[in-house]
Length: 184
Image (tube, rainbow, N blue to C red; front, side):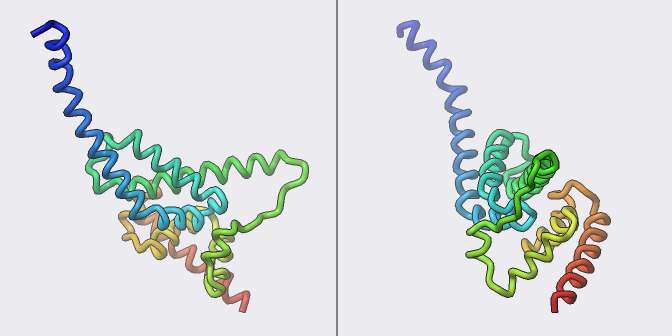
């Protein structure tokens, strides 16, 4: 054997294991994307991302790709994505608030074409009422009732305790009820 071939074969073994591991990661992330992308975009819209929802979901998948090997197990990936989406949305909303504060003439809110097309008339008022709620209450309601997550998963996604989830959910439901009954 020539020395060049020996050195290539000695480096091939560790890389092939890593390549397999990376291929598994890629396949898992692609599967998550195909199965949950639309649901995650709706989550981003409902927690306040509006016309940036797709960008936020794509950013969340990039974060997942970088952090894949830090997950406890691959089953935690969907919950991790939800948590990242909520955090990215919150960060963008804060940024928008600061930008609006320093602009001379604030721009009026405009619904995205996607949210108008996807929302039936009976959901439009609920979504409007959700938007009027404080951010944490809105997140808790969307995660709990729109996505059907249990309180433990909502707490994990929001980074708060189960008791705080219960409080945000109860206050959010009361706020929705007041808002929707005032419109009737």
